[in-house]
Image 1: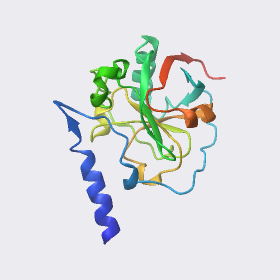
Image 2: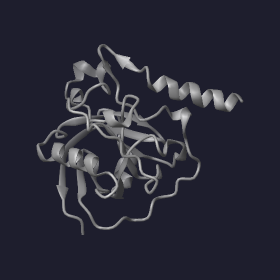
Image 3: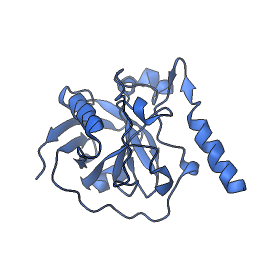
Image 4: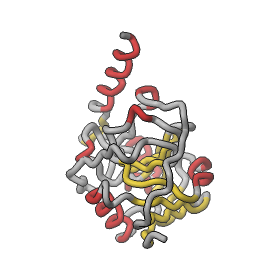
Length: 199
């Protein structure tokens, strides 16, 4: 009974996180849903690859356009117009998630608001899939309480968290550079995100 109540309260807290007039785009609270078995998902079929160049090295993410078409289209469009260039990592929870994608992170004077911004045009559709889970290296969209309001913020899993499955859109999987993901820290800069064809 106590466990169910704790999970319910943690989930409810996600719906009320806000600063000023905008709600924060959040991956779920750490205590609400954390897996214990960090099993990586099998390498998916060829498709677009998101290439993230950071100050710590490069990360490559295989995207899932078949299962999350609107999300992949939205993120790749942002990348192609250089939206992510120069942004900073704003959330790191060891063993859980690394999160980035807020344009306010370019400005250190706005640090208290980091995690509340986006491109201003939410995706408009939640695309959680039974096929892709929150495993080690999974890449999913943060949102302020409803997957359809996800915008530009994404998070990379540092471990498995099966309780998150179904509530967030997993739209990609790290296929190279997981060591880089693990080294990222808050304020580290995303130098560039680009898109290339899958191998």
